[in-house]
Image (cartoon, rainbow, N blue to C red):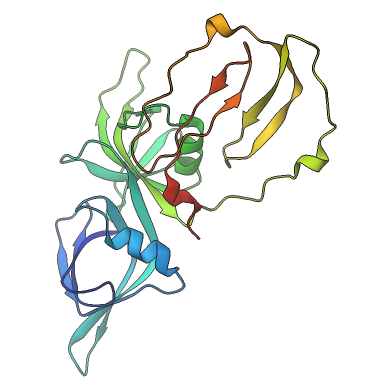
Length: 243
């Protein structure tokens, strides 16, 4: 797992910074494998520290050159940049520092990214399925005896490995009574599906009349939800739809 700086274009030479170790290596060529040009350009246009490559450096002996084969890429959700370690979190109890094998028990994860109205359930799902790298630090045990992983920055794997959403033809159409609205749920795979009992009384007095402050390139997805029929407005980065 490395951060990187390009010397030329995305196929040219680069310096790679191995995460959590301080090691660096210069490579003469980056092999992006089967990644699409859209994802490659997105990764290369990120600010320093906002993209991670996972792969393998290979030494060509006869020319004494190195190239790096990219297996996965990760792009950051806006967050706080700092001197934090990067972790995989394979389950709710364990955080593993990438490239080192060092692990620490963590009873919970606290996301503190800068994106308001980000759907935490979706991000947590990506973390638990190893489709994200968490950058942060571990706070000492709380009153319950559990360490807490504070994560001001999360890197999402691309392309986003979602499963196809069920077509709406699979759901029985329902017409709600007057004064009620049809409500939905957003799954961790970003599928919008009707709730099992979708009709709920609409109480506009309990709903916010102000749109959320989604940052640039984080389009708003809004849909009516329970308990009051209010529109829930999560923000999603537009890059997750790149294939």
